[in-house]
Image 1: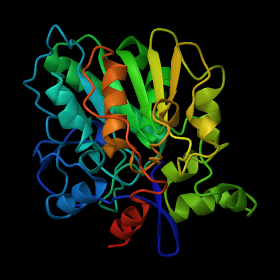
Image 2: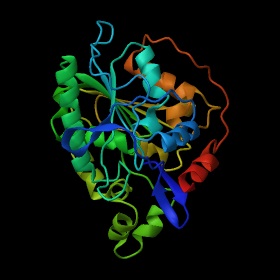
Image 3: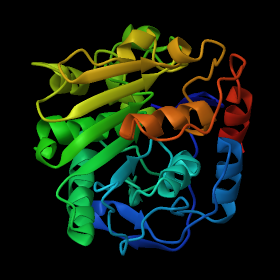
Length: 319
């Protein structure tokens, strides 16, 4: 969901800029110029301002052939009002170092603005579907694994559950997944009390924002009849102090085949929230070991204070 405060209200974080990118499938963009690894969102955002539309390090090598140890490519889907580089500049190189073929697209582009992850989720899921086909064709892989962050978790789960993607996906990992929506700093109940609230949010922010609010028609449609489908292993990785998805139990899936990992259950002193999740070393290890339980852990459980990096996210989004 990835919402931050910008001047008058809510917006979704980390607008991207422009660089060399190749127009790709169904309106999405597959960046081909690779940027350096980053260890913080702030560093990734700052680098993207001068070198926009980058692929994260270790990703989008369409000559990559999956190994016997890691036969399934890993596809990454970013969050709202952001792009592949700013969300995955730490995760993608970590997965590539593990030996995966890693791919990341920019989806949900606003035709009038230079930003991604703002279009309606059904259309974005269609873009992701075409991207899966593109990766499978290039790599020769029958199936893929998927990691979605924030809105990216919902986009990819819609693809799997509603667009037939379950036949091509083995593992789905939802990082800070708004599975049952969020209240966005507690503002959603207030907004919902206003007549025409959904239209206001769509017009002021984006369709994607309105569709990720707790109780949205999109989420009801996605979850009705069960939030998982057979044949896919689902993992959510969430934080009890997620700023956007409250109650944090809205992150968890409830259907068969779902494993729900709460960061504070495995590392109580780590109070990383929504925005820091893709850059927290311990969380990155959870992603790695969710995809491959035999992966060697690189990070120890260390204390992270409540609200870490939030101020910098707000500053970056207003700069």
